[in-house]
Image 1 (tube, one colour):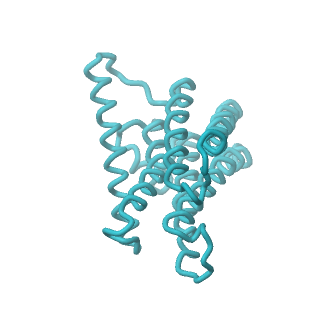
Image 2 (cartoon, rainbow, N blue to C red):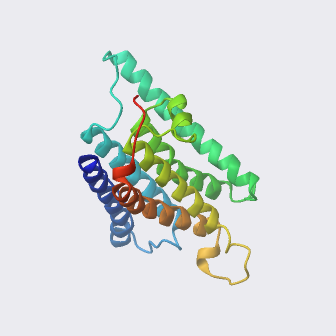
Image 3 (cartoon, rainbow, N blue to C red):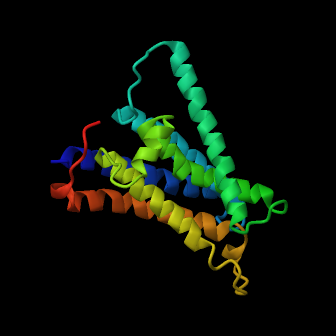
Length: 219
């Protein structure tokens, strides 16, 4: 019943996963001394930029982004402005949450905000691509039984996997192992990325396995 959407989803996720791989490999070949640990912020922004650009392009080309009822230039610019504003506010939100969970408030502020940018690129950006700058739709999707399409279900799975991955990634930081990946915020960003990639695989697989039992309310 949902075979077409599941195939489109799997293809989209494969392209996004490939962008993560390319954003890691290409700088390693072009930038001397580049590494995930040694130049972590550079890797982090490289991956964030790649995921953002590829996600926006792929979701737009597939027509997954919700259509606008108005086609005026002013309305489209307003929609773009609100999307950028929500992206920035999401960065501030994640930064605040991470600080409340124990990250340094002043020291390593750049590293903390960079992690917030990564989390926003992996979570909020997908909400913007699938639902648009519509906070009510976001609340609806993440409420109980709020999914109205396979893409809503996919959004729930990928966002949850990313956030849980970042949270689990914080556990090794206080341990006295003196490993390079324990430096803030390496383990959290790696955990978020692993969770995100896991969600990209798990979402279409879970939906495919449960496709005969999926029922959605009409929009």
